[in-house]
Length: 301
Image (cartoon, rainbow, N blue to C red; front, side, top):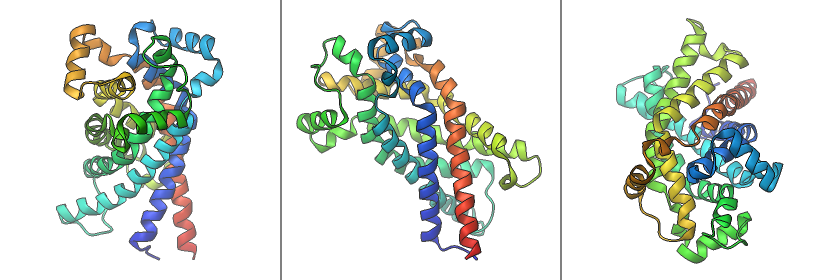
């Protein structure tokens, strides 16, 4: 039985939500370290120093600061991403003149993922803004940039609305798009190429959990290596705009390079690379298995 586009979109959306949840629960502590080291590189000598200081300052819960907006961000992003990925695959098929059921090449899948990420960025930006601000809240308070009362999701949301109105949630949107569109080309490209390698002539749909997790991890590493400096600038814009007017992407980029050097744009790369394998592996494992389960249930009926 062939599913109609609406059912297929619902399956992709649900499977994407499952993947996003798995990604956050697996990788949140490393994401917190990344944001802290990106926005306040002078405070930490490295990943171990950042971990020890975070634990001594705010305890174990400090590693999970911003988890609720991170969950909302990742579930929203991956739901929209994978739903639009299915649509964009059909667009790519139409553009290159393939049948609706034809299997795309790894490069064509990468292009579809890149197109889909532009839609995902629109739902990701507001929730990621709140997440990043919560993750760097302690450093913003101790540096005197903000008052000590803004330490909950709701207080951050109210502060954004009061200061900048609804459009304030889109601080860093251009940086998010600059990260997502090229980044997800490498993300899906790395994932699909890895699956092709592990399948070695067999169907990629028959791959087991280990191959899927390794492919997801490789996709994640490809993404971050390609666009990490852009993500660093985005984090700076989203966090430091709490304390007043913040320069745009180009102004922030030039300011960081002039005052701190080019390597400052790679602050927090180590926890990001460590996080890439378990988080993105869990994302694709949850996505592929939940999708297969729903597809088999649909075919059974």
